[in-house]
Picture 1: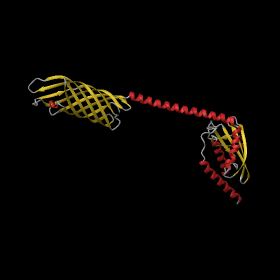
Picture 2 (picture 1 turned 45 degrees about the vertical axis):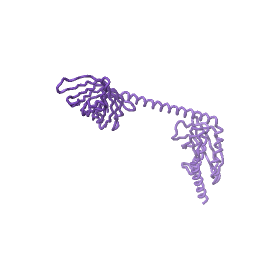
Picture 3 (picture 1 turned 90 degrees about the horizontal axis):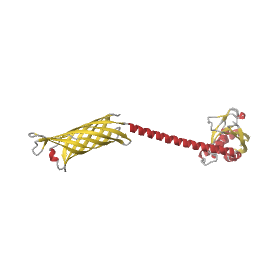
Length: 357
């Protein structure tokens, strides 16, 4: 019965301690921050680990972490031969080896030794007697404090080395990230700069006279056109120069509807378009140049002249295919004749073919 009560007491102490340990904050500003240490506890019974072993290890781990160590469990093939092995890496340069004996059912005699793993030398040792109560942690902590004070110079050097390494790794990560970002930006810029292509438009629609001189064009006419743009790709869309050839016919013009008017705008343009990767893309264009104008009479010789013109265009494309679009556009065009102006509005439908995608 006494052995059962002792086991129950140990389990209760272990459970309560682990709960308290999980709630215990570990300060980031600690003297040996970043120094890695392996903690080994000689099992209470050979070849097994009891709840008491787990309790001792948990207390040691918590108290070492309070001082900034990165503590992990170590196992030993032969405790006395000091041959630790662990999943730890080469940066782990310390080992804390703990032995304990039970003076009574509720008291432990604990001995702790701190070793340098690199040369397997003893840095310091300390011991204490602690009762298995909820004050177990506070009774063990002074032993660890003494252990660290005796080896402070070596531990400080390791902490400085760990801090320098952490600083160098952080700088390296930052440089690598900046280099990666720069490379990605350069690749994106290079990709964007290198990617360009032609787009050809075929359109047809109505052309209506607007403004003061709209009566000259009668009831309106028909327009057809062919244009091409060479696009340069940018992150926010596409820009590009272009050229356009249009032809408009107004079949009945003049006071008696006795003539037909032909306009043949031939111009250069500058355009902007939103990306064609989306379903719908917008198009804006400015165009200008000369336009031959031919007035054909039924019973007289034709009149021909060349007028300068300027046009403004907006449109929407529906990108249903990778290299082909359907769309609608509206062109507002102004013809200049001396001091007079003739304006037209031309809504039309178009199809375009692209050399990319």
